[in-house]
Image 1 (cartoon, rainbow over the protein chains, first blue to last red):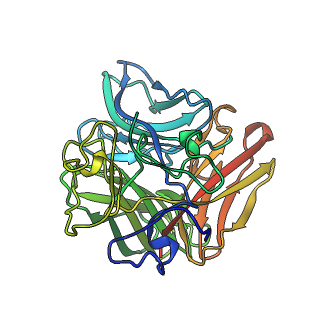
Image 2 (tube, rainbow over the protein chains, first blue to last red):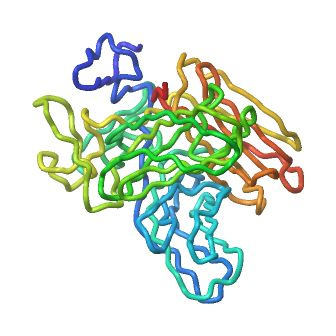
Length: 137
Length: 251
């Protein structure tokens, strides 16, 4: 440890002796910080087979993004969207959605695709967190 | 902002550093942990089976999810090559769910970091039992009355400290690569891949599991962060995987 900086331990832990993993804050290790977060909706038109929604973050570099989407229009179920959903969560009507998240240095895009054209319009609510980390990718 | 708190890493001028280069700034919140759930399950046989972990919050929270099988901690979805277990996870108002398929009889563990979630009006507010500690609120929010979701930082709310960044590169190749993290325990992690193998552009979060086709898996154990690639991306281009490792002990 350097002879200056800030360390904050959890309540009940001696900051002078506890392991780094037990510290809430340590000058040497940046916190995962959130640049932008919000709610939005991915709308799918009637007879569409896919849809997407793009949100600008304007960081100028590619950040980490955590996006939790309402997996099923009719319930509160949410899941963390990755690069490709291996198992579409059952929608119950045969039009199981698969979600895909992609980021660039200016925005994030959430895609949804269906096995067939959906017979009605539908919307998926989601919440996203864009971190301030520069992934240098 | 004329007031607040900023902490820079050693060697970085806190007065001029960009927000992304700071350890902490009251201008930016952090994912904060409201609770940690753990459980162990046994998957029997090859059929699909759903396992549940109760959170009881009354809303579907944000979370980071990890699953241990064959001594490795994978992410919220994946496939273990040893047992061939596959899984995907999600959450609703009351429970987390893990749907597993394939695999022989397999014991697996889960660890779920339930986050203080700004997506919900109902807050899993941490009861402040102690009269000491540090709280930093977001700009414009009274720190004395701020709810957990309005805090940038609080002694009562563990968060995710970034301790290691691991880089991997694959050029028209498959297989497993590892980087030692030096922590002595399996840490939590998050990972991304560039470019998106489906489109050749953009960056996507991992894992990527196009079953029995293109798969990118990430895992941690006591000594390493590992990446396993199955199948070569269309076009055979070079792909880069970046893993941020947190000082959060999974086991």
